[in-house]
Image 1 (cartoon, rainbow, N blue to C red):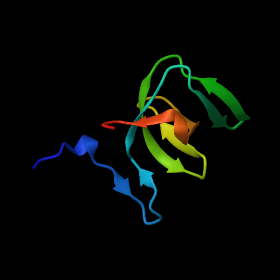
Image 2: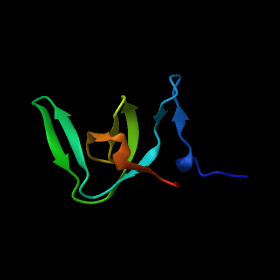
Image 3: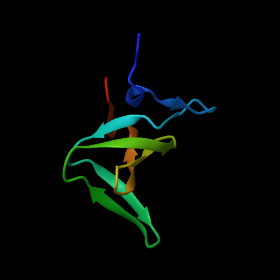
Image 4: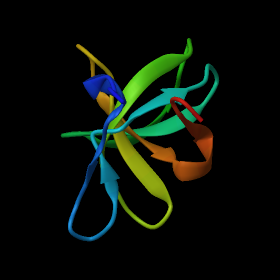
Length: 81
């Protein structure tokens, strides 16, 4: 059976999922971090993002051609699930 490579993720050695695409729904509150510190960011539309990193409660996700935010794990939906 063939699987499109866009639907395949990479497991790190610690067992965390990186490079997986997730859907983040409109209205989700994330934490935007930059040189000036942290601030809340509310998504104005549903977007597809990639997981770049994770900690106990959050995924750090990036949006194509844009920026990255920390999103609570319960607020992301894995594509295909």
